[in-house]
Length: 268
Image (tube, rainbow, N blue to C red; front, side, top):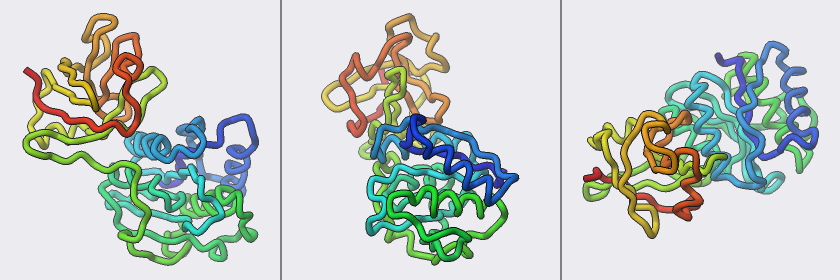
C-alpha cells in the first residue's frame, strides 16, 4: 500500500496543477498509484482540507498522503513529512492541515522538514511547492526512500496547530466541534465511533448541543432509519459522527457552520 498516494488539494480541476503533480510523481516513481481523494477544497480552507485528508486516512491508512492546501506557500513555513504511529506517511505544508489525519493514524511519531536539495529536482518555485517539493517527496516515499533521507528531523511540538483537535470529556459531556459540512449539508463532528464507545455513549439516542440550539436525535445506522425530513445521527463513511437530515440539509435547517462547538450527551 505504500506505493499508493492519496492526493488532496484546493487546486480544483480547471487548471493543470493536479495533472502536473501527477506527472512529477509518475516521472519519479513510475509504479506509484495516485488516488485523487478530493481537489475541490475551497481555496485556502485549511479546516476543510484537514477534514478531507483525515477521511482519506480512514479509507487508506497504509498509503502515503499528499495534502496541499497551502495559503502560505513560499513564505516561512516548512514543508513536512509526518510519520504516524501506525506507519502512515503524510506530506504537506506546516500549517496544521496534516495533524487531524495524523491523529486518525495513531498520532505523530516523527516529523521531517523536507529539504529540496535531498530530492532530485530543480530549485523550488516560490509559488508551486506542490510540484517542486511535496510531489517529489511523496514519489520518493512511494519508491521506498525513508523519510530521514528527505529532510531534517524536527520536534513535533514545534508544528503549527491543527485547525481542530480531538474531542474531550468534560463533566460527563463529550465536547467536540463541527469540522465539515459535506455536499449534502450533513454536519460532520470530530467524534468517532471509538470516542463514543470510550465515553459510554449508547447508540440509541443522543443529545447534541450545537452553538445556540439543542437537538435530541436517534442514533441510526443509515439515513433511511428516519422518515424523510427528519434528523438522524450516525457515523458516516468518513468515520466522523454526522448529524444529517434524510433527503435534506442539516446545516441549512439548523444554521450551523464549521467551527461550531458541539456538546454530546446521552439523549432521553
